[in-house]
Image (cartoon, rainbow, N blue to C red; front, side):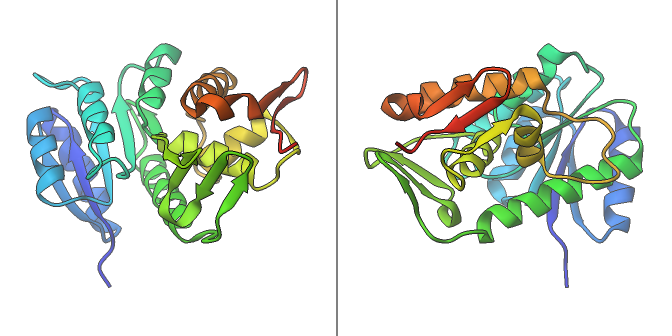
Length: 234
């Protein structure tokens, strides 16, 4: 049985060849391109199951590619793993805010990269199959199977990480979760993954963004000082 298709975007030929070799060895169907323009075209022609996206691209850069894919309803649900030599917190947070699911810094171990890919694909499949029943908390409604959030019956556009964080809290309304618990819920767990792309700082960024996007339901997410956050259902 064929495995998932992966679009790899990088302007360094040696990186493309290394990643393509390792993905193909794992049984994935791989398409490689070297520019942001080609990446957008390839993703629209045939939707991949995941995109490995370099930030430093000629012309249209990786952040713009990510932004474009995530704002297009036809491609918004494609998981994106960013790859870059830029490993500063600001770069990671920027990628996460645009909807990236993970962030790998160069140079990277092929074994670590494969583990990241598998973890993201597992999370994506789990999101689709886990909990088909609707969750309703006052004016907030979540359809896990459809990956849909409604506020007063109006759809809200969330990134993949924001959706997982909100779903994690909504399944246990009133419970208080630490930032580390939210980190684990947002990115899953894998014994090979040594670096965590979600930090305490980026959890706070996600929460601020969630509150803003949820509008009148934003105050449902409460800060519990010294502990973390909870979704209040009272």
